[in-house]
Image 1 (cartoon, rainbow, N blue to C red):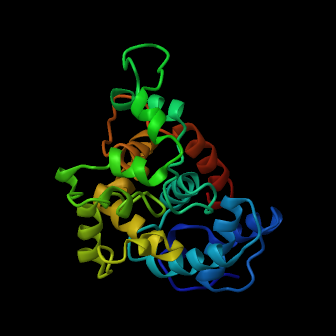
Image 2 (image 1 turned 90 degrees about the horizontal axis):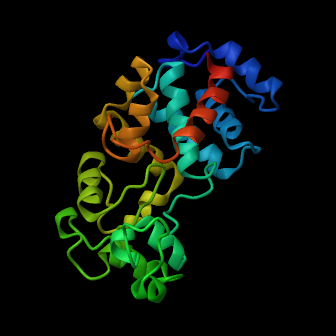
Length: 253
């Protein structure tokens, strides 16, 4: 029996969840919270527990109670979204290895010959930057209003972590709130356990738990992907997150 003393014991059926995880090949090795979350993250990642999954399992045990991840809906959504963003907890830095065609599709106003054309043909700038992640970051993320004012800030403060912390201002704000030296050491945001804490900080400030409580999963994904609970277009990854959430709720609810 799972008997760890934390908020999930009251709202998440831990024993039935543990049996469901075990029946799917992800047994929980002890009665500690860390073991439960490690197994859950391993299930979400569809692989055996490794050093990364154990690290975020331990971080989850420490921080989930503090940030109110205490119902099946909240836990399933957080894990589904972060598993989607990281490719199953394998990538904790933004992949900026764009082809010229990829640049034109993603930022047509900057990299397409004709941004309004149905087929986005890459312009000369796209062709020149293709396959150069650092140069791409320093071009598309050169945003003084976001705090990226120095040469190289786009690359230095590129997207990292479970929910892609990006731009100097956001690194600085998270650093102040969490007591982490993220401005001088931005690479800390890509540490798996640290990235879970940073993601939770954003999650609660953005009000994502309220969306989960209301069953508004489009809004929950909108907040993390676009910054809006009512985005004008479907948030990126909405369908994949929904599939992951449903799979997680099979063991949590």
